[in-house]
Length: 110
Image (cartoon, rainbow, N blue to C red):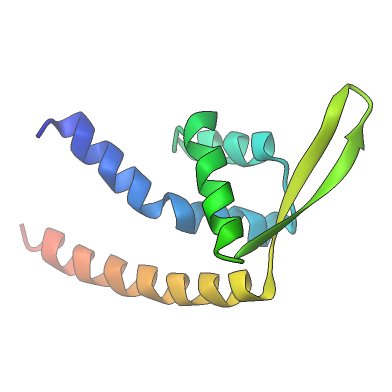
């Protein structure tokens, strides 16, 4: 297994949490806004990764979307968290805190 592959797997593992967090902070967002926010944080994601993940999260009833007409092209789909999505994000946040503490304890000993 290469370093790049391991790094990619680590990023994929936290991508769902990051997307839900972005939508929680912005209330709703167009996919390109989500991509821009991820890129600003140095978490590079391509559209081919984002769109299937958004669809999966919607199918899990964590996200909802609405269509908005655009003056510069086709209608845009804006995503937002559902009530279930907010609760799921709270649980993920707790899990992240616990994992972060555990990993920090282990890696700081080395």
